[in-house]
Image 1 (tube, helix red, strand yellow):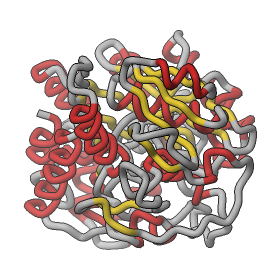
Image 2 (cartoon, helix red, strand yellow):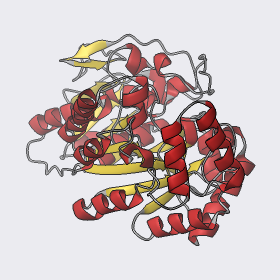
Image 3 (cartoon, rainbow, N blue to C red):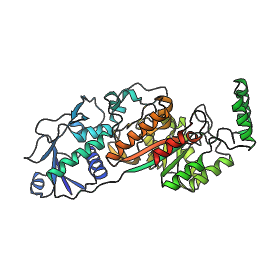
Image 4 (cartoon, one colour):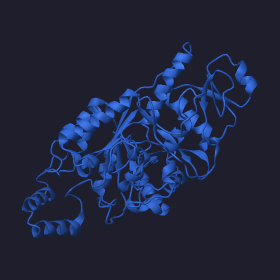
Length: 430
């Protein structure tokens, strides 16, 4: 048990210390505000305050963890050895910055509450991110800080028994469009066929006709391949199905279609299934509730995990809506246009609501890489995409974190756009 002395135990202090020590480093902790209790403690202990009590392990505190609400925060990036850091401390501190305040700032997504210009989909843009601006978006710096901190603890308290966590990998599959041609109804099929002919896409017209007539498999129907890879290599896999009503941004099969329902049920027999909340649930909690109930009706079981379509995340509103519906996990935490770690961590964490100053029961699973980001937004070749994936995976492995990837069922279609990506997917998850 690690004893922590601080002059005031706030919800922020309690939250970030438990995440840092208990969830990342697997070190049990307890707090005290009494100097006498700290002095007589014979086990490992650290001080987190404005001044040290003696010659102990001391971290000089920034004001952030003792404040409430959102305030302007002055941030200047410096270095701790070769790792970026901020909130610098004076020389008396064992390390040169307030590692806990900095971790809280990043994990709570404090910057996303501050004034910023939203993108066309009303999202916090990657260009506004502190990590992106300062070149550490592709590093899980909170976890890196924690493991550097651990090495100092081991030197200071060599007799303490330290546990280790294991590297985990989670493959998430977004099913925006379950089938390219099949089960779309007469009107959509006719419209797609006429569009192919008008645009002189005769090969697409032929493929559509053959698929609808059941002379060939639908190219987006890659679920058996994904489930085979999951089974053969014991890959922790979650499928997120979009079952919202048809809109400009949501174009999946109708949730009333018996074939689509059958697909969802069959996938759920072998893998975890979650809700891919449609585009307009972003600011419509009733629509979100309707879609959750719809998927639960199909599965005949509670739905506890979700991801927002188009990664539309507006803090804290979206998460508060999920909490109201008893969602337990969300997998939206990432940027569409850049790979990396939006919250600067590769460890799942509980959402801290800055509006109510409390830890919530909603667990956030930050992902590191998405297929569309590499291919469409970063314009990388297949070789460059795989290299980037393995680079990020290696960063997570070095800190025994959780590596989460986002692929789509169509990515394994091996069509002209996604040619070669089945092998990339296998290399990612195996």
